[in-house]
Amino acid sequence: QITLKESGPTLVKPTQTLTLTCTFSGFSLSTSGMGVGWIRRPPGKALEWLALIYWNDDKRYSPSLKSRLTITKDTSKNQVVLTMTNMDPVDTATYYCARAGYPNYYDYGMDIWGQGTTVTVSS
Amino acid sequence: DIQMTQTPSTLSASVGDRVTITCRASQSISNWLAWYQEKPGKTPKLLIYKASTLESGVSSRFSGSGSGTEFTLTISSLHPDDFATYYCLQYVSYSRWSFGQGTKVEIK
Image 1 (cartoon, chains in turn green, yellow):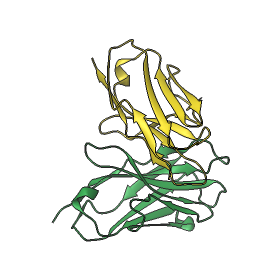
Image 2: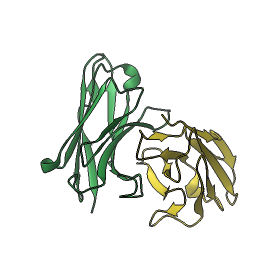
Image 3: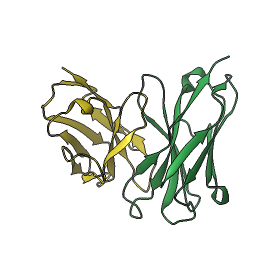
Image 4: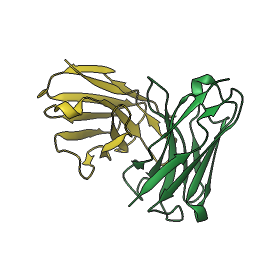
């Protein structure tokens, strides 16, 4: 069974750095073609793709947030960490991680998602 | 970067209606497109991947088509459980990924 779970603070202050951890089971980031992505959904707004890391440490970032995001993986711990600097109230959202497949290795895009974690940015 | 334009943003329909949602990519993405359903308080659910492949366990009233830059999600006969927001996602290997803006399917 494949599961992912996001963890991190529920409340951060403006200008602080947010660190979110995705802990997963049922697959490995040492497997060719595997990846983990991050997505967020601000209240009342659309899903927004944030970042992705692949088994080979290839990293992709949303162009609008690239300067603020860092994604890393710890294969031995089955974890992926996303940091977002200089948080602002507009970053208030539910943050999800999801299993991702590199096209032509796996066809499904992002198939299994975590339950999400709500982050509020407020002083 | 690849932009996804999804239309309409809102759709009012009745149970039993045939519903079509469109996503257009700013450049060719071959068939690297997925469709998701999101309900309030729930995790988004994968419906279709690689433009037309139905995810295991998803009702056959959902279907996807298209390639290149134009894609559609069709619900053949709307069920009460289908009132939700739908998103497309492009996931090409050579670029960042991106979602469409979403389509909310409402009860007419």
